[in-house]
Structures are given as structure tokens and as C-alpha cells.
Length: 204
Ligand code: 5GP
Image 1 (spheres, rainbow, N blue to C red):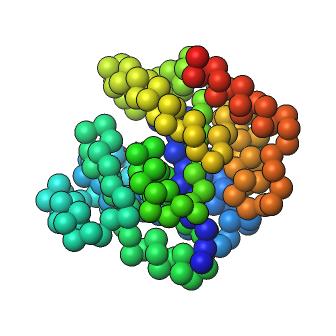
Image 2 (cartoon, protein in one colour):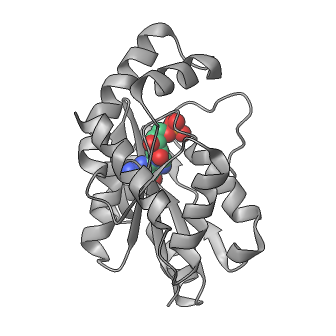
């Protein structure tokens, strides 16, 4: 069986870029990223079947009733679900799977498969997160405030994940991620401390 990883992070933390870099690295040659189904509207640069499978609410409900999802959740008013058969077929071929889920989804997967490695990426501070969300220029001010509020909730759940990684410096965060996922080495003391201290700052 391959390994199952679930990576969560508050929106704007750089999770997607980190995962992209992990997948481009030869260390992850045996690893695939899950593609979820969602009822949210497709964004301009997204493609059906690559970013997500964009489906209607009715199709989503049908999949829920047919038990097609490993987990599903409502995030920011839209539904997201992980196709179960796909994940199980990849794992049974001894390949690893990365799922990029919200914290509710991560907990559901961990409950169903306790061997799942859960990873939570955190921003160095709420100020930094707010800056990144604004720079991304993807959301309205109101939406940014909503995402920041949601971030606090997510951090309260994500604090108990198997590995916390602060994305202050991208390369450090990427190193931590690759080390945790693909090597038996533990993170350096310096990085473990940095991750712990950043989390404590966000929890205060
Ligand atoms: P976005 O709409 O910005 O792509 O994603 C919003 C949130 O939904 C992100 O936190 C993302 O990780 C999460 N998400 C994406 N796919 C799934 C899924 O299949 N299940 C769950 N629970 N969350 C998902």
C-alpha cells in the first residue's frame, strides 16, 4: 500500500505552490495528487479534470448518496468531495497520494484511515496572511475578512495534525515537507522550534 498524505492550510498560506514544488521534485515520482469534485464555479485559469471536477449540486448529491466520496465537506458555501475509488486504486498500486483538503476533510480521512499523515501549513502571522490574501487580488475585501476569520478556526483544528510547517521562507517549508513525507529523518531542531513558535504565536 502507498502512503496517504493530507495537507491542509488556511487559504493564502501558499499550500498549493508548496505541493506543486513537491510534485515537481524527483523524490515524489511515486506520488499523485488527488483531484476533488466541487460544486464551486470554475475560476478563469482552472480546467475541468485538472484543478477539480466541476459538477452540479445535483451530481454531487448523487455521489454522496452512492457513497462515492472518501470524505466531503462544505467550504465557503461550496461542496467539495474526494473520489474514493481513485484514491484506493492508487494506494493499492503502492503509489502515494496527496490530498489537499480543508481541516474537516482531513479529520474525516484520518478517522477512516488512521495511518494517514496529516500536515498543516501555517502562515508566520495573521498580518502576513492578510497581506498575501490582498496581494493575490482574487477576493473582495469582505471575502478576505471572511477567510481570515476562517483561518483562526482552521488553525485551532490544524494544531493537532501530525506535522505543522510554517511557510515563512518557501525553501525551508519545502524542505520540511519533503523530509516529513519522504525520509525517515526528523526535522532539524531549528526548524522544529520555528514551527512550534509560529504556531504558538497564532494560537495566542
Ligand atoms: P478552493 O475553492 O480555494 O480551491 O478550495 C477551498 C478549500 O477547499 C481549500 O481549503 C481546499 O483545500 C479545500 N478542498 C479542496 N478539495 C477538497 C475536498 O475534496 N474535500 C475537502 N474537505 N476540502 C477540499
